[in-house]
Amino acid sequence: MQKIAIIVAGGSGVRMGSALPKQFLPLKNKPVLQYTLETFLLSFPDLQIILVLPDAYLNMGMELIEKIPLHQRIRLVAGGVTRFHSVKAGLSVIPPQTNAIIFVHDAVRCLISTKLIQQCYQQAMEKGSAIPAIKATDSIRQTINDTSKPLNRDEIFLVQTPQTFRSDILLSAFQQEHQPEFTDEATVVEYSGVPIHLIEGEHQNIKITRPIDLLIAEKFLDDPSL
Ligand code: C5P
Image 1: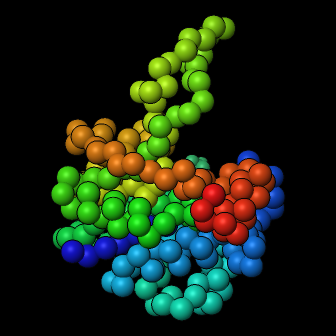
Image 2 (image 1 turned 60 degrees about the vertical axis):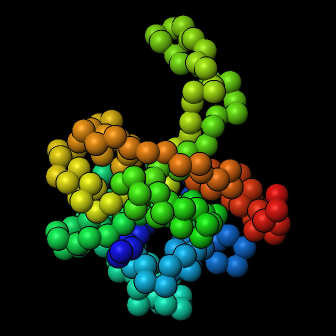
Image 3 (image 1 turned 45 degrees about the vertical axis):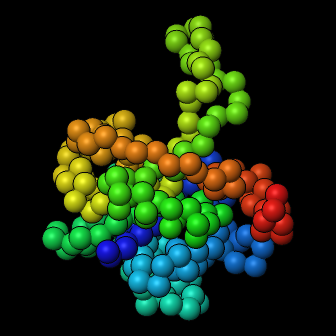
């Protein structure tokens, strides 16, 4: 089965407070994005990558990927105004009749392992989808107007990427109109009436969002047994 990874990095990353989008920030000796691309390229010898970047950063992206061995398997696409539109832009370069497993991954989840990518592939082949998620460890509260109520954390999961689907399911779900609640692809697919299937995620598969996340990622790269 064909394998395609849409790596989304179309956002501007305002929470990091840096001029450079977070996917280009240095982590040890190379940009965050480079780790993500290299791990996906390593996970399957026949996997193709569609890298979605903000229009203004396509040149910087091109310079980065030229440094990566195997970069012939990476194609660059300009992103859209929301994550939904960026993923849709990535999907638009896939021919409609393609039979593939498609991974959609946040570029800034640079500590993803080849093992999780391969497990997602297996489950998506069997069940149609694989959405990595980990159990919440904090106490969780939901706010309602001025009050709040506790939620049962044993029933709460934090969703990660790569959100992985059979291509027919994902391509058809993205024919829908954009809805404000579409914060990830699992939501888009469910909205189209197709149930999704979770898979155990990984604690180190963090989304680099704030400056402290870069420090955590650096420590993990120094000692992957952490
Ligand atoms: O905003 P959030 O952190 O949830 O974004 C998740 C991912 O979606 C990031 O990798 C971000 O770059 C990507 N994104 C995108 N296009 C946008 C907005 C976000 O590809 N317009």
